[in-house]
Image (cartoon, rainbow over all chains, first blue to last red; front, side):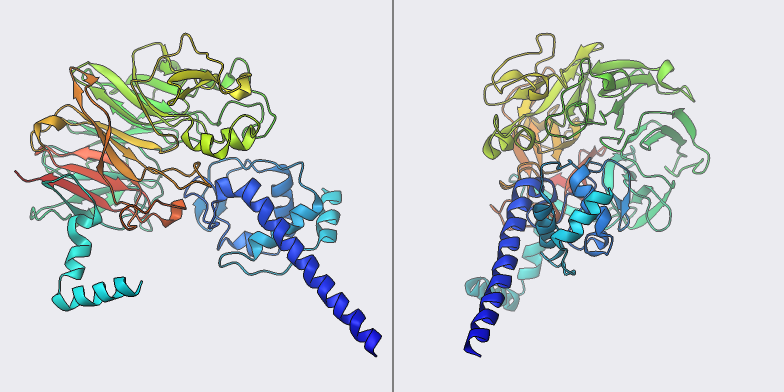
Length: 130
Length: 418
């Protein structure tokens, strides 16, 4: 019983630790790769760089598209919530699947955003599919 | 915070807090100047133009819900507020210019001309003359700014659809293309006939090249030449972290003003202007290291402003209402930066630089500040925090200066009382 409790506790701590690590990685990736264009508040720059905070497709369910945009960049005219953003998104070929999952979770759950978690396995699978 | 609250409560009790907050429409101006809100919430108002009798036209970046993108604003009762607001034209764009009874407006790929009647009402709202068509519009830097010279030639900015002419735009490690193929049809200012219809590239002339994106341009009638303000390149630190720190990127390159004559080259994408070293430096995409000089044939800027502030309009002041030092000087509307992040942003103001004999005669200074709506001395951290972002400038016949905001669409009217 006592042993079980310890294992449980350890597991719990482990999960929390992993989540915290994930959060730290996500924030670090955001600050070094994304912040300059999308800004500290995730608000983007009107007409130039798309906002992440409050953006329907950032908190949406099309994870495949988000993963693709982060890895391969984006250079198409597209409307987001009624506005157009003109700057090309920089590709990030060096980001690992762990980092992509972490930064996705960071942008999907920062500022006013709240969205279900994205797993590393999910990202791995999506990148394999291409 | 508590102290602030006490002040507000105390102020409200005395009944001056609301009045105080609205004084000069929230702007900070030199002594003797006053500002008021000529209009509010008209949409993303880019450039503005004003007729001899004082009717204003604003070009919206997006058509409003009524499908109007050219907004006519009239202050019939002369109380300083536009109460008669109408509009037409279902296309977004930036440029607008008035010459006599001709009103010019641009979309991102064409320039149209409308006729105004004696009351400055549009006569051919649904059937304008197409002056120029088929201009390159590839999303980035697609807006077309326009101005005319006294002979009636029209100058159009065709911005480069790129940051630094890399093989792959805004991609780390991607080289600069040599020569830059963008420059044959963009990255410069083109000259066309202001009255001929249906012109395309073949009818125009590349007047000046090597300009990444010019949004502010105006003809100086003293020097009889065109002046332009360029938006300098972004992201030196993002793509070349070994060469540039965040702090260096925040100050590089300078936002530059050029006096351009036919055939001039301002150097983009091969060089950028470093306002600290006061040199033209080879772009890192073209083998630069932050020190190597280049652009021997490229023009030197006539003024260099701090980096990334985004000059949106240039206006030479011709009126007599403002004090003598402003006569013939240049006002520049700075949209405000984003690429200084993670450092605080700059700009979000209207600057002034005095001119004598068609040349700057002193340093630039901030003329109107406070557009962001943040407390004095608070820098904008994120662009969306700014309540208003200066974009267009226009001067009325009586010498008042108008500033448009392309965030929500306020128009500020600035006057001087002797």
